[in-house]
Every structure is written in C-alpha cells, then in structure tokens.
Length: 419
Image (cartoon, rainbow, N blue to C red; front, side, top):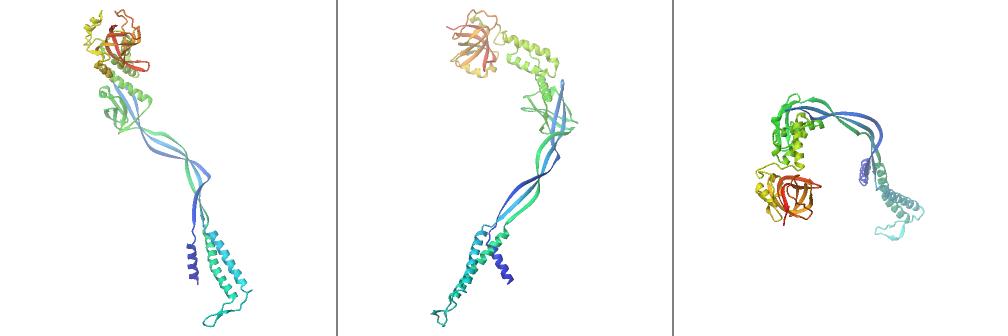
C-alpha cells in the first residue's frame, strides 16, 4: 500500500508546475573601509639645458590607488508559485462536496431494486440509492486527486531569502608613488622618427646638440618603447633646446628672405628661454625684419642687380622679370606655391582693389589678390585709387596676412598706370 501511495504522490507532484522568480534587495550599510593597491606606473622625464648639452633625468614610478569601499548586506529573495493550485482546489472541493452530498442523499431514497429492468441472469436493475452511491464514488475519484494536487502545490510554493555581503567602490584616488631613477634606452623622438638614442644610467642621460640634428620637430622622449611623461617645465626645456639646435647655423640677415627671417626670429625667441646669450642675435634679426616691414629694400638676388631705378623701363631692364602675372598668364597658377618663388622678379598687370596708400595695398590680378609693399622712397609720381589699372615690377617675398586672408606678398620696384 505504501509504495502505491508514494507512486500516486509522485504522479500528482508531476502535475504541478512551479514558477520561481528571484530579486536582489540591498540591505543596510554594514561598514566602510579603505583598500590600497599598488599598480604598474610609468616613467617621467625631467629636463634641463646646459648648452650645448641636454640633460635628462628619467624617473620611474608606481601608481598607488586608495579605494573607499562600502560593504552592504544583500538579500536574494526567491519566490515560488504554482498557478495550478487555485483551479485544483476548486475542482477538488466541488468533487468531494458533490460526492458527500450524493452519498448522504442515497440513504434518503429508495433502496428497492428497479424491477422494471431485468438482465439475462435474472437480476433486477440497481436501486436509486445504489446509483447515487456509484456517482458519489465518481465525484470522490475526481475531487480527492484535485485536492491532493492543490495541497502539494501549496507545499511547493513559498519564499526563500539568502543573505550575503556585497561591496561597492564609493571613490578612488590614484597618486604616483615609489619614485626611483631607472636604467634603460632613451630615445629622442621626432614626428618623422628617432633623432638620437642613448642608455640612461641610474636615470641620467645627456644628449649633445650635434646629436640631435635631423628632420622634423621633437615630439617625445621614449623609454623602453613607451613615451615618458613631460611636465610643463621639461617640455619648455626640450623645445628651447631644439630651437637652439635649429638656430645654430648663422644666417646672413641682409640677403635672407623674409620667411627665413621670420623663422629665425621664432627659433631665437624659443631658444632664449634656455640660452640668454642669443639675445643679441635675436635683436639683430628682429631689427632686420622690422626694417623690411617698414618698406626697406628687398634683398638682392640673381634677378635684382640694383634697385635704384628711375623709370618703369629701367626697372624691367635692371630686374629682368621672368614671371608675368596677369589675368591670362599661366604663371598666375604658380602663386599656389609662393614660397618657391621668393626673391624672383615679376611683371604684374592688375587692378587696385584696396587703395595704395603710404606703403601698402592690394592688387587684383585675375582671380587672385596680391599684397604689395611700396618703398618709402619711390620715384613715380602717381596716386592709385580703387579701380585703377596698373602695371608694376615687383619682387615676390612670401605671404602676408591681411585681416582674415593670407595673400602672396610682393615688394614694388616700380609702378605706373596701365593704359
């Protein structure tokens, strides 16, 4: 009997479906504590200049991390439910109740066999009481299993709570720590590749100016393939040293182009931050540049044997311009690379778009504009207002920024109205 009951219970359990859902709820704060870690750091470079030597100090460091950690109680709640429990209980109650009612009514009705029917064996038909008791057994057979299913479903449902501890990092602070000199290969890197490489011994490495000559601008200091961190002071020292290296060749100021003068002034100003002895050279370059911009004569070249001319024809003869800049001239396209034309003489035909006053003005040549410097001492006696067509002998001298435009720059040797 017991194995049969166990088998029936197992069969009924299989008829119940359990649905489980879990949720996690944060409980109260248990404690707050700090946790420290030491992580891999990097390398920084300190720089100073003792001309003609760049002295670098390579310093390695770790990263010390301090974390503020909050510890909470965390509850995991699992809820189990059986959707079949309600319907099973309803069916069971109805079935058992109907069986009980029929069984009770069977005692109130006739127990006399039904004599209107007789089978071949001579037995009369069942009585009304017997029929009602039979149907009560059917109701009991339906109701009892349904009630059993409802009870088992109720037992298998419910709620379980599991409590655990959970951590959350509330804040984090990283600082450099364990600073130490390092030993290894150090490379001065430019934007076009390595300029020089040497090993650092106990953090110290020196580079001479003669070792850093090359193309490109100094971009970074590399230690074992990784860029070293440069603070503002080290960056300024490195830039100053590189500027001094680039400015080391002596420039002949009277014959230099204006673009070369601008470049030298820029380099010497940067170099001055690490070398005070370049101040005289800087002042000389700035004076020459200022003289040029005030309208001084352009530097002589192969196309400019002399500048003291007295007529347009004489200017053409003396300067022998090989470029012709006018609306239909193919030479006009060469102004795209005006730097390659510096120092060359040109014959220009155009229209004054901004009146030539004192020593400056703009000529419109076809679709292009040309900024013109006029010498303070000029022999022509013409005034050129807006819209005046002119022709001129000029020497190209780089570019000039006018407002928001950067225009090709030329210095006028002689100008006259074009008829």
